[in-house]
Image 1 (spheres, each protein chain N blue to C red):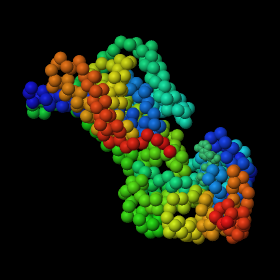
Image 2 (spheres, helix red, strand yellow; image 1 turned 90 degrees about the horizontal axis):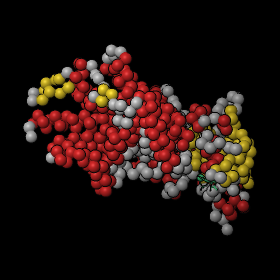
Image 3 (spheres, rainbow over the protein chains, first blue to last red; image 1 turned 180 degrees about the horizontal axis):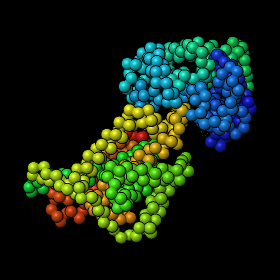
Image 4 (spheres, helix red, strand yellow; image 1 turned 90 degrees about the vertical axis):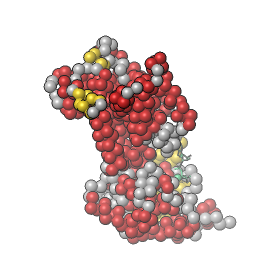
Length: 241
Length: 298
Ligand SMILES: Nc1ncnc2c1ncn2[C@@H]1O[C@H](COP(=O)(O)OP(=O)(O)OP(=O)(O)O)[C@@H](O)[C@H]1O
Ligand SMILES: [Mg+2]
């Protein structure tokens, strides 16, 4: 469904991503793991159109047998419209918007008011706290609540593919577990997931496949299980001696 | 001091405050979305005044149509300024944007002097707007009532738009974070342009009001009201629409009462008073009355 082919991205004068190729299949959870500064966020920014790669292709096939479109020539809003949603690093809730407004703005490009209302109700059912605190400004929520809001907001565009940038960052272990279970249910609902994580053990446990990125290059790829049992991965990312 | 005199002064303060508020809103909205002060904003008031003069002079247009023409003229100029000056500067250091808008202001003022001559012109309004309405001890001109009512209507319309509509929410989201707004599918260029259009339309209407109220307009008429409206926006808390409105009315009332109630010998200090008030407010409340600390943009 998503294919990156030899993508190079410059960021602030550095060649941050150096020839990344990766594939995400329909219905998969794929994770991209790597250390600080490896180029994970930069890669996602290019997929969602916030950054333009200086070289390479990013092909997206919204429907099974539709022609692939190259995202590198598209604007961020066209990419959202094509069915990709991006749940950004550090949640980036709109602090001046209420919780409900944050959710509604996630559906900005949709014109089906009834569908939006139904999806809002679904999200409220899934995360009742977002209903209870609907009129509270976004920046008054706790970290865990903000994460749920960020996920809900990303779902409101009815995406086919969601990009998650370190959803577990800064959350208590019990919440981390919960967040990963939510990702699992999102996938079960038919949405494909590309996940970026530093928390490799959780990411590999929940992923069908994974890639390791180091200094802007993919150095390893495999199924979640394979990578979890790879000794290099264990040494570098899973804290094994 | 008599009661009618005091009421007259209060009404004058409300009128001046209405105009300051309308101009201050634009400063605030534009700052809120691009984190820059548009130094050419006061000149939009001038443009609005001359557009109003032209509209009144050219045909027997009903007042609402004149208002509409002035609103559109202001919006168009605001969008052109955004597109030609602010958009190319996006991402440059703040100083660059300040200097660029200062340049626009100088260009507009000199163009106006070249085309229109520096001579002040009489701003004539139809007789029915000059008619007096009796309110017991005082009588008030129709135009003066209209200025206050129109300002209130515009402020309510704008706040409802920003608070409740989808585009209003998208505008607030854009003001908070460009990249995340783009991830929602928002075309941020369009939102920024819209903020300039709305802010400038309101400043232009203030120019129409200024001409109607004081009866005289000139190419540099926007400079001082622009500066004072900027003070009002800062007092209210730049970036906050309600703060700009509050700051505008406080400043308008305070200025008129300062001149009207203190000994005439002091009235020459009215501008010193306005800017003194600014310094005092900023010493006590660095973010203004209703401002939040929003210096940084993620
Ligand atoms: N705004 C920026 N300006 C300049 N360089 C940047 C900027 N953002 C990131 N970089 C550089 O780009 C490279 C990749 O950064 P990126 O944010 O993609 O890493 P990451 O894998 O997401 O790291 P983290 O796990 O810390 O989020 C790094 O070397 C970083 O220093
Ligand atoms: Mg990152």
